[in-house]
Image 1 (tube, rainbow, N blue to C red):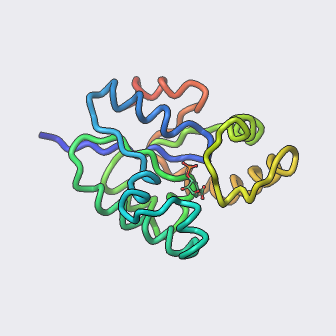
Image 2 (image 1 turned 120 degrees about the vertical axis):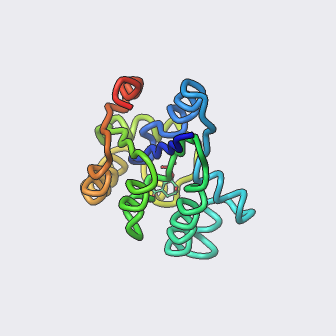
Image 3 (image 1 turned 90 degrees about the vertical axis):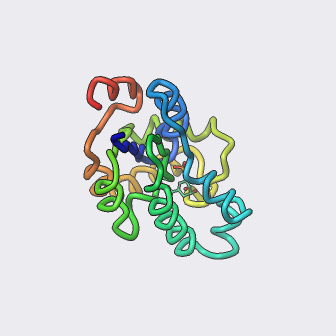
Length: 165
Ligand code: S3P
C-alpha cells in the first residue's frame, strides 16, 4: 500500500484545520491537527507551552511531532503556522510527504483571525491596522519557507487542490 502524508501549511487563519478535516473525509484519510496533537502529548495548551517553556521548546515539539507522524500511512496533517519555518522542517516534510501551501493575503488573514477565538501567542493580542502590519511583516519572513511547498493553492478555493494531487 502506498503511504501518503499530506501536510497543509500556511499562515495562521488560512484555514488549514477546516480544509484539512474536509480533505481527510474526501480522501478517506485520517486528519490530525498538529497543535492539538502536541497539546494532547504534553497535557498543556499551546499558549501555556509558550509561556512556561518558551517558543524554542514549542518549535522542538513541532519537529518531534512531524517525525512521529511520519509513521502514519494515509493522513492529512494541519501544521501550525510557524512549523515550516524552523529546524529544517520544510525539507523534512517534503521528504516524507506532500506539502500544500494555502495562500491568502494579510488583509483576509486578519479578517479571519479576528473572528477566530483561538489564542495565538505569536499575534501578541494585536488588532486592527496593527494586526495587518504584524501579519504582513511575519508573512514576508515566512513566505520563503511556505513557497518550498510542492503545491500552492488559493486558500479561498482550497478544493482546487483535488485536481492537483
Ligand atoms: C503559530 C501558529 C499556531 C500555533 C502557535 C504558533 C505560528 O497555529 O502553532 O500559536 O507561529 O504561526 P495555527 O497556524 O494553527 O494558528
